[in-house]
Image 1 (cartoon, rainbow, N blue to C red):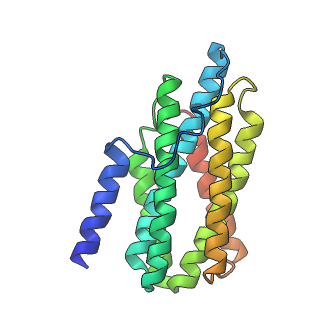
Image 2 (tube, rainbow, N blue to C red; image 1 turned 45 degrees about the vertical axis):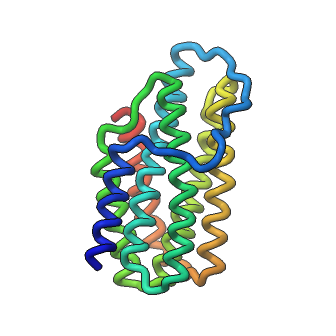
Image 3 (cartoon, rainbow, N blue to C red; image 1 turned 60 degrees about the vertical axis):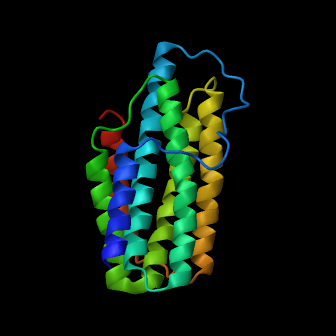
Length: 207
């Protein structure tokens, strides 16, 4: 248990303060960037900051779930999904740098909240409920990313390439959790998750 706690603390420190490193190529590397005006650049920066917060929360959620996980095989699956989310974290941070923008100042708070949710889901409901949270989270994130594809400036082809790859990965994570035995969460829980996500995205748009 001590080793697990050390690993969880290491994950938090790396997510919040270390420079993330992707294991896969940057999706925007081969994209021809178009010139953005000031308003478009600010909008893209705000949207990518929200996406970066989402990846901070994903790292926290998977870390909390892995800490509470009862199945060694499931822990391996969660770790693999977390590695792909690390790619997303690196990509969104790189794009923020390119847009001369910054991550959310409240990332430690977002991380703590998501970690608590992931750990509680695993401890209170067991692996099936924990997986249910993964499925519902990824479905909501998929819808959120699709909305960003609609909001991103047409000229921001780089951000669009990143969001498109992230969306494909989130769909795969939801399918993994579904196949691993996820249970469908009650409607009130889903609604609460949506409300919490709304608060996060609204605040992260500016802070």
